[in-house]
Every structure is written in C-alpha cells, then in structure tokens.
Image (cartoon, rainbow over all chains, first blue to last red; front, side):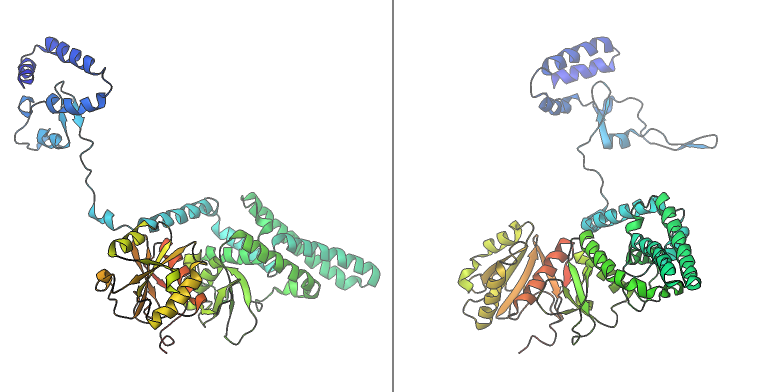
Length: 332
Length: 142
C-alpha cells in the first residue's frame, strides 16, 4: 500500500523516467517464476491506476458540435466499465467480464439450427450451379423426361434409342420394309440426338452424374426446381408417355424390368436408411416399394398419400401402419 | 418376467438411470410386479429388451417402493410406461389423448418396438413429442 502510494505520487509529478525503472526491475524478477500467470492476477489488483489519477476526465459529458458534425466527448466512466488502466497507463479490457447475452438466445433449439445449417449448406452447394440457369435446367430436364421412360436412366435411354435404330436397320435388311423403319429410325435418331444434347449441356454444367440420372430422379429434380406440388408423383404406371415413344413401346418392355431393378438397387445404395413399402388398402396383397424414407416423406408432403395408404418398413414382419401416422422425417 | 429386468429401488437410482444414459432411450415401467397388467407388459418388455438394447434400456420401478414420482408423473394406473431421452421426458401421441405415457399393457412386441424406435429417432432429432405408428384410440380398451 505504501509502495503504491509512493508510485502514485511519482506518476503525478512528471518524474516518469525514474518511475519507469522501478516497476521494470520488479516485473523482470517476477517473470522468472514459473507461475507467472498467477502473478498477473495478483499484480492486477495493485497495478490498477486509481481513478482519481486519470487526467482529463470529463465529469459531465456533453455533446458538442464541430460545424455540422456531432461530437461525442470522451467518457471515462463508460470506458472504465469495460476495463481499467494499469500504472503505465495501458488500458486493459476485462475479458473475463461476462459478455452481454440476449435473452432470446436461450430459447434457440440448437439441434434444429444445426440441421437447418446443414440443409442450407447443401442447398447452397446446389445453388452454385443452379442459380443462373434454373429455368434452362428445368427445360432440359423436362425435355429429357419426354424422351425417357419411367425406371430408366439416361444411359439406358440412349442405349435404347441407339440400339433400336440398329435393330430396325437390321430389320430393314431382312424384312425389307424400308418406309416404316426409316420413319422409326429417324424419330429415334432425333430423340437420341436431343437427349445427347441435353445430357451434354448438363455435363458441361458440372452435372457429371447426369448419365446415371433416372427418370424418377429427373422428375424429382424438375419438381424441386418448380417447387410446386405435382399431383401424381413418380412411379405411377399411368404416367403419360410421350407419343414418340409409344411407337417403340413393345421393343422397350423387356428393357424396362431390368432398368427398374437397377433403379431400385441404386436407391437403396444411395441412402442406407430405412426403406418402406406401401399398399393402398388393407386387403391389397400387392406391395409397392421399396422406397427410401426421403421419397416417402416427399410423397407425404406432396399429398400423394392423401387418400390413405398403409406402409411398413421393408423387412418388418409386423402390421402395416397408416402413412398419416408415420413421421418419415425422423427416418431421413 | 419382471425378475429378468432391472429394478430401480429408490428415487436416486431412477434419476441416475435417466441422467446417465447418453444415447439410448430409457424406458421405465412404473407399477407392481404382482399386478396382472404389469405382468403382461413386463413379458413384452422382457422379450423386446434384447432386440432394442442398441437404442433403448428398460427399467422397472415399483410405484409403492418408490413413490417419489407418483405425483409428478400422475401415476394412477396399475401399469405405466414412460420414455426418457437425455434426461428429457419424451411424449408420444398414441391417439389416446394422454401423450405422456402408455398406461395400459401392450402385448404386441413389434408394435412396442416400433414405438420405441419412433421415440428414439424422434428424440434424436430433437423432438419432444413423437407420433406412435399405431393409433390406440379405440383398440386398447378390452
């Protein structure tokens, strides 16, 4: 106490040169001890500059004007609320003073926030290549969908179109029905070129997986792009097929079952979560599925199951539950 | 089958059981081992305990021996099953109007497993209330 009093006097007189040397040696010594961290704390108490020693403090801060500019005078009281001066006159913020927290922060459900964050991150990822040509993309997708058949991916569609023209070419040789086959093959060729063009556009757009996209996936893409609810979701067999394709309907049928198989396999690979199968009525024996939880969730949200359907997990032997009571969101 | 499942003998044990479980659902059956309804429930619990052990753990509490929770949880039924996850009571919309607990004996194992799974998945997603796959509004009274 005596020491600090003395130093205070020295500080007030302008003998700062002498004053400097003394605390410097003291600190030097103490810094050698291992627990110098603790010392900081101890020092703090008596290194603090007494408030009375601070010169130039305004007792009553008043706002002044410099021409048009409003001046906020230096307010020492306010400054001292957030920290203090040590003997050297260095201002030290009090970090350990608790930060002011807003009460609303307490109510935040951080689990949800994190989920949202993840979602928006994903969306942003997608947005990067979407944002400019969203309309274009939608056009491309719908164009592709016109050419493709349900349960088929782009590669398979290309194969089908290309293969057909080959088949019909050989058929032309053997059956000698030149007129019809040319019609067929030209239509095929056009579709083929169109699809290739679309796929290429998507590929250059950075969609490297485009050839693996299935009909369903594209439908989903279109849907999410439109952000509208489509009345009839994906795997509806009644889905109208483009007229161009109807001509070749017969030739495709054997391909189709295979491609649906691969589609399903891919689906389960994609998301190794819970898979679901559903039926429309209790009396139905035919099960539709399996589908991923995500798909089921989408369908539920789009009102696909509005009429009421029964579902159960694939592999479960238990009873069926109404889809209205299943919260697919928690399985995603 | 009650003797095969772990009993909690006092309030502290119950609290600890709920508190200490980090990532499993804690299922607690309040009631009495000798009660016929509880016997049915315990049978189901015992059978499913092994199957659900990865995401849930079952305890039995004698509501006479440990009366601490009777008032708080309104345990007036002979047999009550409640679910907790990370020290939080998880409610279930069973269709019965009482979302706090299952207050009847369930004998269908698969149904019970499905409920527990729903509770687990919902709770992990931060839900305080989940919807049971089955609606028990009309069926459960016999």
